[in-house]
Amino acid sequence: MSETLKVVENATCTFCGCVCDDMELTVEGGRITKAKNACVLGKAWFLNHHVEDRPVAAIEGRAATLEEAVERAAQILARARYPIVYGLSDTTCEAQRVAVGIADRIGGCVDTTTSVCHGPSGMAFQGVGEVTCSLGEVKNRADLVIFWGSNPAESHPRHFTRYSVMPKGLFVPNGRKDRTVVLVDVRRTKSAAAADVFLQIKPRKDFEALWALRGLIKGVKLDPGIGDSIGIPLAQLEDLGRRMKSCKFGVLFFGMGLSMTRGKHLNAEAALALARDLNRYTRFVAKPMRGHGNVTGADNVVSWQTGYPFGVHFGRGYPRFNPGEFTTVDTLSRGEADAALIVSADPMSNFPQPAREHLQRIPVIVLDPKLSETAKVAAVSFTTATYGINVAGTVYRMDDVPIPLRPAFESPYPSDEKVLRAIDERIRNLQESA
Ligand code: SF4
Image 1 (spheres, rainbow, N blue to C red):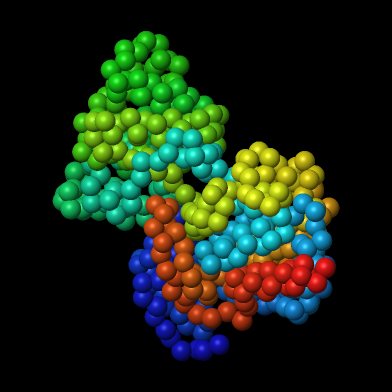
Image 2 (cartoon, rainbow, N blue to C red):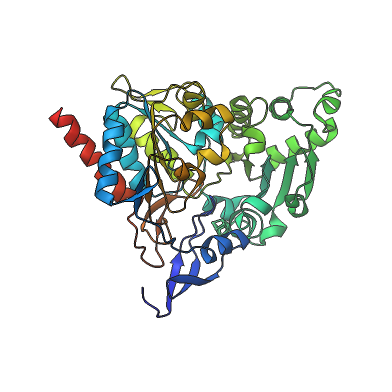
């Protein structure tokens, strides 16, 4: 590996859904030593990245060649009766596309980490639709910015400065001074310091509050008792409703505090319906705060290829979407899946016990740059290069804008896309010769 110093300008950080594409990376001796413009999370992502000294592949924990591991993975997937493909939010769209093709070829399920974060929002989009915009429009136009059930100060540190709160824009020339920022959450998080108005809602009362706002903006008189029920006095809710109707361009960013608490997709539907209603009076959008670097890309790619964003089953030869039935936590917890292809995800670290136990009973194939907990129990594991740092390609920012990756240096390991293509090709050969 070259010891010379190299500077990569306009590189892209894929650590969170902000996908900041203004990084200036200094590379020395196969390591990133400086990451100018990165936030604290981005710096940790870049500066702690090092290529692990592991075999390119392992079968049952023993080192194997790439070809041997591809053969074994293809045999497992081609023979399985209920295979699942899961993960995909920390890899390129190019790799995601091949993974969806494999699920289609083997008649399995394809599901992404969306199903354990903003899956309910994906269901709400299908049910209600989405009034949307890019983060560039937010930067240039938004004079009312509401964060609901999300804490960007800690989860998306540059969101405020790059897109939503601080920047000066075409129609908000004074930046922060031209915007009103509201935070609705069950506790006073670090993001509250950036807000003009903080509304502390009672836990699990989001749907009621959003529905009450829908009523208020339509002129419905509400019982003052609603305040006690949701934790926000009616006068404050009325004030928020007035601000929403009278702003020039409003945006409601909602996080997992909305999508993964009681009500789930109904909460997200209420937020989307509220934004839709507000367009009778002004321009208003609602957008989810997406977490993983390319989880939005996963939603897009799975949607292009199947018509649905996650939790899709190809067992009948055509795509069927049914969250709760075809989502990975469920297929594993019920003991239905008989093989798993896991790409850039670590379900052994974060899935519930019954799902983890079943993963240990079935053959698992893992593609990951790190020796994850899931890679440790895998029948076949591949060490792959890290997207964005070692691999070029495309990722989608949280507002569905595709961003190119400019890798900093080469990895000795193959990309997810290369490994997946080899597995797909071998499965096709096996199927043709059967
Ligand atoms: S905000 Fe997110 S994408 Fe931007 S530098 Fe920080 S971690 Fe990376």
